[in-house]
Image 1 (cartoon, rainbow, N blue to C red):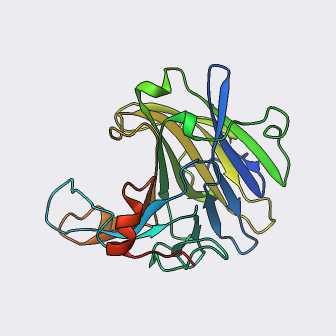
Image 2 (cartoon, rainbow, N blue to C red):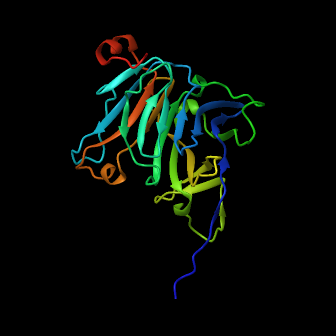
Image 3 (cartoon, one colour):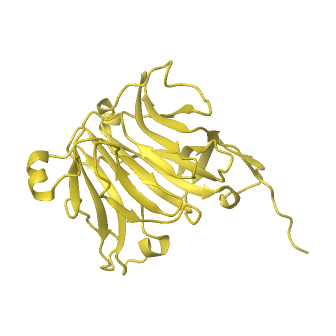
Length: 273
């Protein structure tokens, strides 16, 4: 006799626009937005960082058999003097753009959203003072149009960096352990090493949505000597390629601010319109 199938109800914050904020003590800052398109596309925007010039790249990891590799975003990178939007479309086309401000040149073929399972992007920040403060009235509440979600920072952010990770799942394939029959929208995950992370399940408000984005937050070692940094990477090659150290793999990435931006424009070029 076949084992009975467990039915799990998944609850998520369903909103067209999700505002992700961090709070340390009485200070709460806005970090990025997640948006959902009617066609199923996923967008991540970064309007809140005070530094406006960065390096964007379609980066390549060499198939050299090494578990770790140094990736220089200046190789194949371009300078942008504006914030950009990360777009990941249902067919897997991924790119950076900003209407009327930058050309859509930094792009690559990633994983179709129906085939995506797990890590889809990461955002790393250093220096919370570099981000806009959240408004306790405007940047609060839950609605189908706009929802603000807050991660609490327990230790001083100036002593560390923070990593926020988005993982994309089909609702029917969401990994669930234990006897729970309802999960979300607040969720605690645990990796193979036993580390737990608090997170939120978010999803599109449109009726055709059948995927959820699981966003988690954790402290990580400092990214470098700069006091304020915003780093993004996503748009990965297929998982079997990313996991095979003998195969060349790719992803999209940016880092703000860009040091010596005017000099780099001369050598790398720019995607500014």
